[in-house]
Length: 337
Image (cartoon, rainbow, N blue to C red; front, side, top):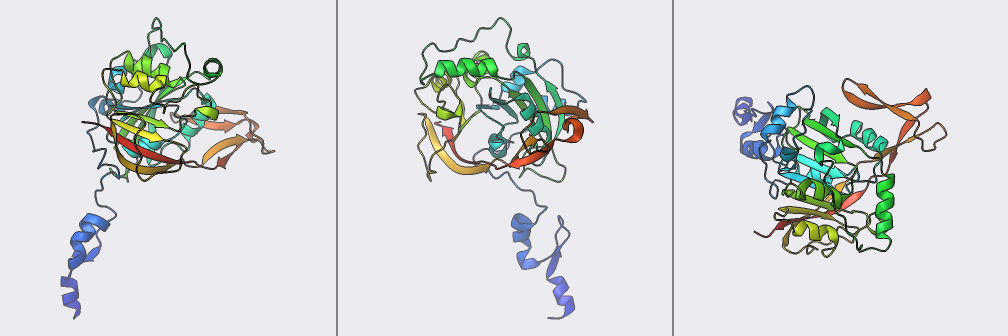
């Protein structure tokens, strides 16, 4: 084959500008080109939805609104009680929902702000942030009725101590996808609410009170038993699930993660939901602050640089070191139609 014929048998990809053999061109454009448009890896279960109008409008602002748009944020959201600082729901369902509400009374304010500043969410940059006051999400005169009978030994004592010792705060952030990424990594924007609250009380005060259900409920290794939770969120007869299922509207999807040997397919603990897929997520290596002797320390402060909160060690003797990440086995379930 002469040189002229070789040139005729190649075609330039309009996306990456590389020359591709004609017999491989279609496969390259649809499957191999690094600049092709790719769907999110979980789009077969969680189809892409348009970014809600309220989020589009807020993302254009220089600061978050003073009036908290509670109903907008709750509608079509993902609720994650006993969340820790786990990004799993954002990894799996971002783009199907654009609002994520996390709550965990075991997370210290310093730990949260450290993680949200760095490493944050992979592929995203935090563009807006503000604190949330309790009366912005639940009226002062609203009484949340917690159970009088507890399903775990010492459950009442665990709950009282946890609420008494928790570092109370709330935070709202808006995240923007990096310009060089596409829908494979997630939508252009998403919203995250983090509250240091107890899961059942937060569900009652936010969702039940407003007669709204989260579109996705995430219950991943919620910490019952030795984990510090006062009740088992994974128990279908427990107070948490009874509250969720007895609401007028129920979640469309469940993300369930347990400390168990992974099964290829696992029947849902909760009736009325069918298995769709098993997957794994990995919490990236976490960080802790240590002093020059290598001992954990709280001798650091938060400073704001260009609108972002950053950690600065006092006397410059504080450094961050990695802690091993955690692997989650997660089962995705969909509500019976």
